[in-house]
Length: 565
Image 1 (cartoon, rainbow, N blue to C red):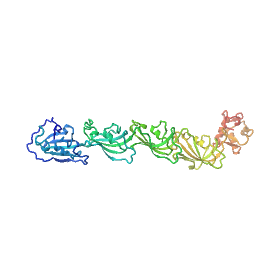
Image 2: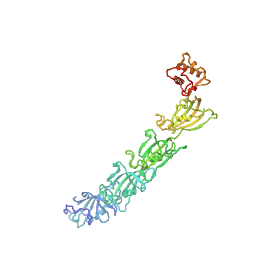
Image 3: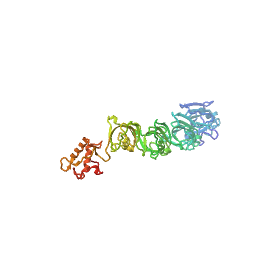
Image 4: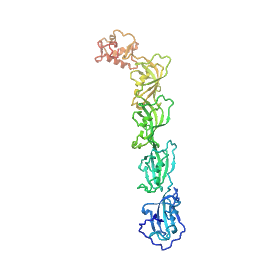
């Protein structure tokens, strides 16, 4: 099998062989016995191919004269180029990778009558146990076999893109030499700019996220004649089983897709707005990393102020209430090269499916829309009036909060007495009986950042549909009681029933209630009358001794500091 200086035998072998006592059985041609055939023939040898194989060379009596295993490396050679003995050149053609054969070669196709020094005697029949490990041709390029294509592919890898992928790297015989899976992290790199071996640079082009392909490359596009000095031998074909997980380009910006915009959109988010939205966050390959739904609460933040990652700040601008959109964010506008650790890897593209629940601006006031106004609308609500009204309260996404209709009675308040949220006070002013309004109340005029436990989320915009049912005129500001007619003369004496010069609380209460019942006076509506009278008594009882003297007693007209007679 040794041909010129390219023989398979090590000339340093110390073992010499004697001629066989019994003459060998003559052979006219090579005899090939396949001892193992792979289920699939990845590739069969052709003339002109370069092969890597292991062998054990013996004489017919079983004595070994040479072995590639003993040298710890394959035998690497071109087939059909007269670099091998003729019998081996012939035997290798048609062999498949991982095929094992016992090859018997007659002398005239081996070393003939000359033999080979002291190692192979003249006219020796040679037996070779051959295991083919690799085959390639100088004309080979990168071979791509795509075995999984995702249903949708909006983008493919191009030169200068940055990719994140997993791979298993094997030799052509299946020997594993490297895997990103064992390191539990993707391989992250630019494509087409020389950061990878040439074959991988070529093999990744045109891939879609989620695609799986086998990339096979000859050594000229891999690690060449010398290998990598460790796990990859010289002149080895390489096979990479790749799944692409992520793809972006440094020039990428935020991409907004899959927009579902409600029919009515009177306002869109701008920089400085405070938004409440739900989201599902995933990587580009669909790997889930976070969701506001799983926490059963919206994500609440200002937009355009740097409170969220730059890509989300940008993607949340121009959104309508109720709108759904997908926001795709490249890593330089997301969490960058470092990621967040356990959930978001470095250099990862982020995909957020967003549903805008509501938004407002800190400068917003209550927005009042009159939906119905009766023809007769002469009397309007004002501060201090006692009013009765119906309402339906919801969040902006339609979630019901409360309704007077479900209780079968009106809600009754005194305007300006802080009995409802400020936005409702504003929305009920200057309204006439029978009028209907739609009130949009920002959270700072409603229930604020804390909301109402189990009813109103924090920072929620409120929507009320209100209908005014009844108005009872209030008293002038600062008054708890007014006379309908002239103030009676000798008022103190009338109160002092026992004529002891002092008015007891019971005397005071009985007198005021009598005036109200007789229609001579009126208490401020909407409050507990006895609490009002107690307050009036306290204001008249200057020294706090529990009774009013004539010196203490004064009318409202006499001083402006108290809310009493």
